[in-house]
Length: 447
Ligand SMILES: Cc1cc2nc3c(=O)[nH]c(=O)nc-3n(C[C@H](O)[C@H](O)[C@H](O)COP(=O)(O)OP(=O)(O)OC[C@H]3O[C@@H](n4cnc5c(N)ncnc54)[C@H](O)[C@@H]3O)c2cc1C
Image (cartoon, rainbow, N blue to C red; front, side, top):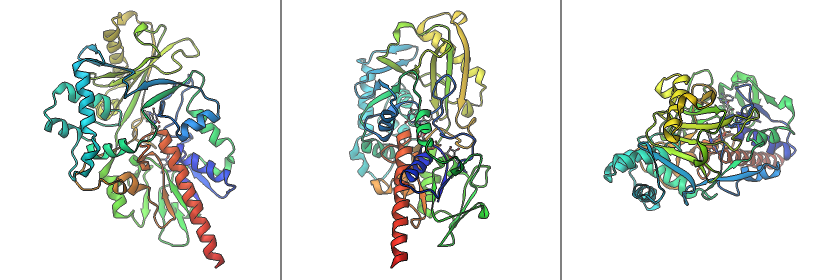
């Protein structure tokens, strides 16, 4: 069998086959790296997935198995570990506006709405409910950007369903210094035979017309089963350097889910390194995430678990998605770095010309990772009736075609959407389904 993509989903599926004693698989990875959107730089700073969202997930279990320590970073429900910086000042979590924000989010994501056939975007919902500009920008920075997009693209009904099926709770953890997400990938890759993993090998075509074999890249690979784990952004592409073409074309419901109902926008991280922690004492372990409403490129920032790098520097991470990214705005890295420095000086009241700044680094997942081409998937607003769990586009995409072409990756996970655990779990599910299909085939051939 063939696994397309070596991110969390693809690597977990390969590891699962290996553990089950199945050796005839290959993993095709278009880039030279393994791990996909799990990526740690040489300083131990996470360029991609960073937080362990919730408790009891496959990711938490793997981290435990490899002995990685985590610490609580923030908790949305209790609003601990989170600060809001709005119109040039920090807001008290008991302030009127934060209370209104929380109430608005609660009402907007009310599961009773799932009975409504017509979807609206966050933006339309907020307008229809006469919400102020301040609340609208807080919702955008706090939720839409966390979900990988802007208020006007994010679906209320699609996200409500994701939110209500999320089983891992509201606590969010960071890895302690010395541990990284890449260690999880390394742990899963370690037992695999190296010649089963083809790096720099792009899958362009998957032909499943012949009922007894699947032909990949015009016959370079012939297999019985394929697990496609590439990001939604890649599935949306046709005839581009990393895009995939299916023959016959994907069934209509899957094509609609990919092209119209799921989105994947840009997302970037801007890391700044300082000789001293310019954010001073205002940031403790109890306050690690700041939501920022009025900066064009940094809508959230936080302080990586490592905080101090090996060479003794202090790091702060600026994050944004959707229209507030360097690739969407078409601005240069230097601009993003300098404006983030300005923002920090404004927030923490220091002299930006004497801030001990050493260097800055920008990674935009749309611009800098062409085989990923975006941050992560989100439910896109569409008009239509699709809001029982079965018809959620993530579930539509997750279904196999003829028990031969399987789909995994974070985009296929409803309850663990847009996360590393979504990737891992979906890889496991698809691998189990392949084993089930193999067993059925074996039984049939003995009859
Ligand atoms: C900036 C950022 C921050 C994030 N923060 C968090 C977080 O804090 N916590 C969290 O849980 N998650 C976070 N995520 C999301 C998480 O990283 C992803 O959901 C998860 O890693 C996706 O795994 P995957 O296997 O589904 O996809 P990927 O990791 O994207 O793997 C797919 C692989 O397919 C390869 N590929 C693409 N096209 C082809 C082709 N044609 N042929 C062969 N191979 C191909 C790609 O190169 C890639 O390696 C974040 C992501 C980003 C970008």
